[in-house]
Image 1 (cartoon, rainbow, N blue to C red):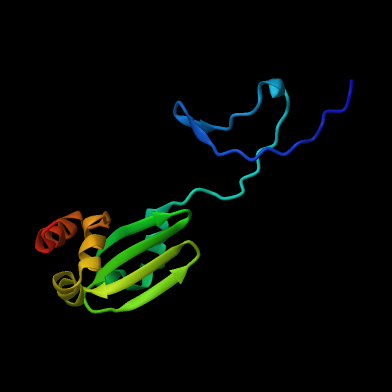
Image 2: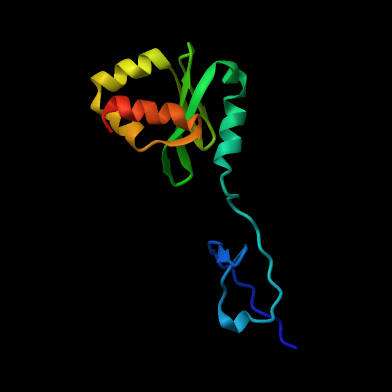
Amino acid sequence: MEEPKKRIFYRRTIRVGNSSGVLLPKYLLGAEVKVLILNPPLNIRKDILNLAGDFLDSVIGIYVINVQKRKVEVLVISTNISRSIESGNYHLDIVPINALKKSIREKLSVREKIAKAKPILNKALLFELKKGAGV
């Protein structure tokens, strides 16, 4: 039997029923393949809660602002802490609620970020902030 040609294929996984799969050319049907995970999928909720773990006692809301190719921007609303955390694929801005409410009134860019935010923790606060921003 002739030696199979070793080729490397870079493919994105796709949904296949209740699972995921990798599509390969038909001529590989019946061949043994090796799948190597190059970039594991993000578990945004779990990762953010781990990063904000030290501050959770003063956190009142967590919201995903922007997700771009493995870079996630997160707004963390606290009672009194102001800090920025950059770790791996995540950028967390921890902002006190009073400062955020003032920024919403004064800055259009902050209103736009609140308008497109997705809740991780405390959906009701996000609704209230959107209402206050006129969104």
